[in-house]
Image 1 (cartoon, rainbow, N blue to C red):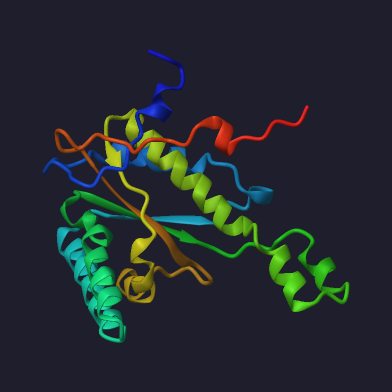
Image 2: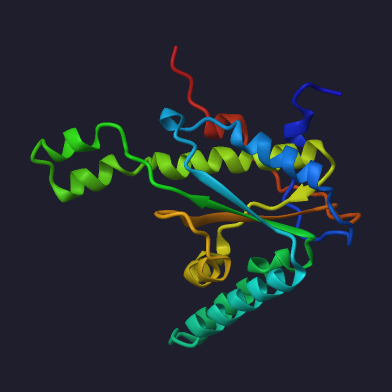
Length: 212
């Protein structure tokens, strides 16, 4: 077994067996997520672990209802139908024994005050904030979570598609942490047999530039 197999075995899993996950495994996976790097070690993340099947069903309905609401305002019929078809991908967490929501908290971008004090135009200010380190921190934590889940024999699926129902989901979860918002979510469970697959990757020469 290669030393990087734990990376190559990670896949986006969307179907799960009806098997509960022990709390100790969930805790270990979340702990691994918290060991991700974050700017200034701010650790501006919070993990909400949903095991309650009733709440998971409510989350599914929220996404379905929001998808229907938004689609009704789309004048182009083809576009409307395409958007409605997305809902099945945005609710793949419906049969997972656990759903983990990652909330993103406040983060002061290093140097932002100096940039603002430098007669910066709005366009320059927006360009400076493009890397968005607050979200990068969340991405790093989510990647750790996914890899830890894979290493322990579970499957997960990095999801941001349901973001159009973010406000409604936040209201349901009612996380009491000021300044935090729902950034991403993932189902977690034992993968269904035959659901292990991964799309091809771009060749290195297409995605890598070497400067010697």
